[in-house]
Length: 277
Image (cartoon, rainbow, N blue to C red; front, side, top):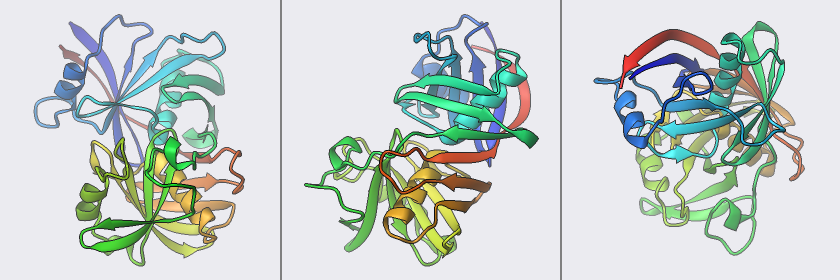
């Protein structure tokens, strides 16, 4: 079976995007793992599937799989690539595209210079819904790891995140602490772990250890979670430029719990390909 795919990235967070609107293929976790192998397959952080919607009020169904075959709820960098893909492939002529995800609906807006704005929805802060083990909401929670107690912010952006504020993100032990905190017992569904360095109230740096992936060049939902964490701690203004390893994202959030986090950034096509499964 010959499958057409597109390789894309959002700030170095790389994806294989497969059109299941015009191609009739069943993608299994085994196929995802096979294609995700960077030595024997194509290689990617996540696979994005473009499917016909089950809801008549949206344009597409948007599904995300990690390279290990696990399906995840949301991916902000992927959402930008998804929007660019469906326009470039002429699957839609709209500048505003509504999609359904495992976490609900999202709206993707195409801007000038191939930038894409994504309404990421309101952050989920109630611990049980993140999920995170705590009796009640707090801006930070003490968490024990590696023989020390750290302050972490727990937030869901459709997927669970824990955010640490650090003095020097370039030298932070991202791999070590990320690997320990991702499966921590207080995150029952595991979590993406962000390391945030605040430069000013309108600028910050971020590295993210992604659940099921490890550290990536960029993480859209991680950037949104970091913005929420910074606002909850009183460290950031309403609009912030976040510098990730792969480039910059602009993130806006009012600070009100029911308001959406808005993310704006680029989406880049790398190449088109075909592969036999």
